[in-house]
Image (cartoon, rainbow, N blue to C red):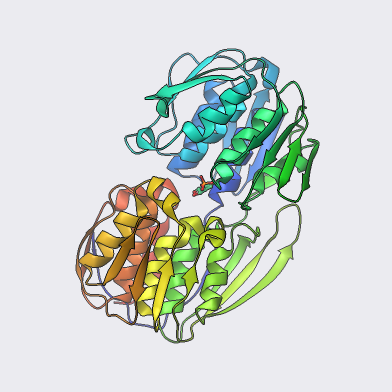
Length: 425
Ligand code: S3P
């Protein structure tokens, strides 16, 4: 796709698509309840459809799926069935990892697979702790999909998370619900806590003391979910507003979960003006964000901040090119295990647009201020890299030929209709 620089300023109101993390959880957790789960304003994308496919293979019915409302009917956890075939999680790491915990107590064999990217992603991070609880689970080469899980009975006890990952934490929380005794998870760096909030709202006995989360075995009650907008999808527009002089963006009705707003905090540190207004504090905070342009300066993002903006880090590299001074991201080696190696794909593609950027094993550094040129770039099947590059094209000075835009359907199918509605070329 050929993309051209926009003429500034960028002034818009955006209602981003439904939150991906919340939609996945609403769908997957419906399988642990009896009866109907209503999901309002879900994200309808390839990734969340992978979660729908997973629960359908277990006997959950999708009774209704309109743009504004999905209804899933579950026969109850104890009546879920063994799938007739191998189940594909497509490109979705969230589906696959949360499913391992969901399936830990299911009496039957489930084989999970995925596309070329997902089959290369590390799964030992869920396999090892689940095995330690006594779940029968194994993967190709010890730690990749396809994975086979034969659930049944398993223990609770204590586990310490080896990586700061909300997906791994969530898998263990779900396994804790069907364990024979309480499970305590030690989380050293906080990550998004949507699953904890869901479980509490659905009647689970879950408590947190400092870095330790304890969940007691029990069944969940169906819970109607209103999905707010996705701050990680809105981040592409927030980045553009922060780069293009005199821009102002209003992001409406978006998740303000404390584990999701790290990118907006970094924008503020870099000099942009950010205003939040909370419209709904519970169970998971929701509100509006206003982003106003102001000259940007470089910043440093270190390991403890990484989980709060893990999906937005490629955008920090782009912002760095427009900021005064150096912007450095370190302690982010996890980026190498996403839908693509996002350190390598960010560095290679920004390089193609003439940006000088230094690569580290665990991050990157960019000297500002630079001018982005046109060129040929390839998202390599990664939705977030594709959208970052589309924003780079809008903020650059030459025509950009972007390969791989189809991956955007994974998390933001309407991205280009929004893009074209605002593009001024
Ligand atoms: C997600 C958690 C993050 C994030 C992913 C969605 C979630 O992954 O990158 O897009 O919904 O829990 P990790 O927790 O593995 O870092």
